[in-house]
Image (cartoon, rainbow, N blue to C red; front, side, top):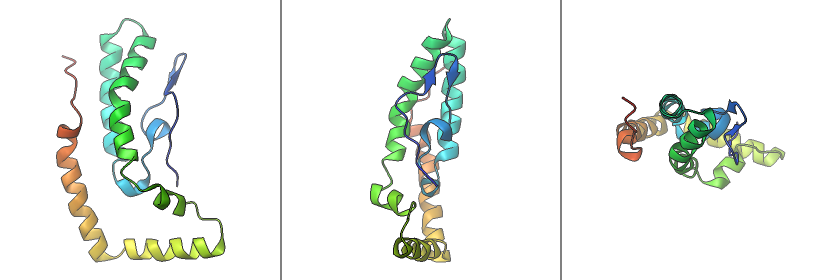
Length: 130
């Protein structure tokens, strides 16, 4: 597992979207929402702009702050633990994963995820492309 942070989301006629551009890590539970927001904005900006470079620039300008806020919710130490290399770190990571997979922890995560899902419309101002 990893967290993707790239300096530019487009190059020429190619543009990155979703996890390829801004994967927040599996533990945030926000990858699908970010991808849908990105797809909506990218499609809207392609429709709105006359040239793809303008559309790609606008897409990144609008979505990057939202994607970065999602990526920054996860403590960098926790992200590093996901990439354990030593035997001790791997064993610790396995223990943490087992704890996180427990019913009581998952119940807590589901409640948090439901709150985050309700806030998507508040956290990101969707442009009107009609």
